Amino acid sequence: MQFSSKLKELRANAGLTQEEVAKRLYVSSQTVSKWERGLLTPDIKLLPRIAVLYHTSIDSIFSMESVWDEEHEKKLREKINLFHATGKYELAYDTMLDEIELRPDKFQDYCNIMLYVLQRKMFDETHIRRMLQLAEYANEYCKCDDIRNEICRLMLQICSFSGSAEIRKKAVGYYKKLPQLKHSREVYARFVMEPAEYSAQLRKNITYTVDLAECAIRGLITGDMTDEEKLFYFKKAAALFETINDDRYAGFYDLPLLCDYCEIARLLLSLGDHDEADKYVKKIIFIIQRQIDPEETVSPLIGNPIPEGYTHPLTKCKMLLKNMLSSPAFAEYREKLQHIAAEIDSK
Image 1 (cartoon, one colour):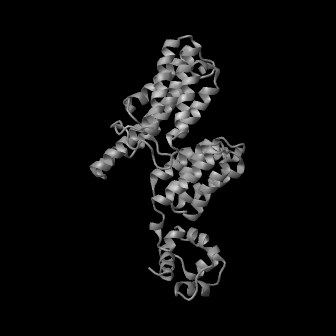
Image 2 (cartoon, rainbow, N blue to C red; image 1 turned 120 degrees about the horizontal axis):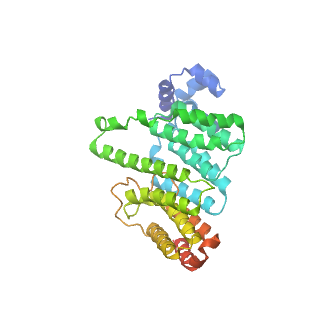
Image 3 (cartoon, helix red, strand yellow; image 1 turned 60 degrees about the vertical axis):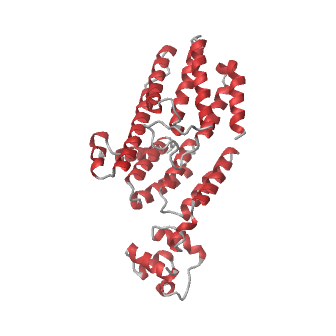
């Protein structure tokens, strides 16, 4: 399709007149008319604003969606990971934001940058207000309920950490937007999904439910508990992921289990039970080793071991090992931990 025809089609789909487009873009209606008749092309600086106005992406305007192939995604992810690995977190953030401004209709990227802001604790007002702008835009134009719910889940956490009372109140609003379990639509999913799609959805629901339950159990742990009491809860939390991971490669879903095992081992060492602690340190090393050389066999209860847009498990494993190596509690395991850390770095 010609560029001029594409502009006309996008305007019609948006339900706008040439006069309305001209007003939004601060140009004359005659200019818009010339664009759509192929007599003139928009200034390159206007392209991002045109894309936002028509709720699309610049590549879509030029009918070049195929250009954004897997190779582009791979290079983008490598660039972000490089910035992250070298501590250039603001550059990683800016790169993700640039991608969103270039493709405002790819709403999964909104979840990715919000997750990054949450993980990196970028809770200053500038970052949070930018996330609020993205969330507002997605709420209006994103048609995918799952993505909108994920955005609400992330934004309620981000807003709750703000130093501004005004922004913290918004967390309640995002919380109320999330669907309540008792009104869940999932019981009806089999009526509208093909068998394979329904099976994949059930696996996703299982992992979400287990993740929620595991977080809830850990949330019961308080600072005034004894080590024995904390150990009880961490073991119960770990048991949930042990059930669905089934002692097989689970990728992203191995990470909460690793964190629980780390706390269990630390508590056992504090209580003087070194034999039991040894078992959990071995489990930690085994699971990390499995991330380095993933097995083909994935637990049948796990859908996608590495969900799209999430940080690769090995990155999290590096952080866990770094924390363990800096902890005096794990001093006797330093050599083993350094060995596995070196193995990750060699990949």
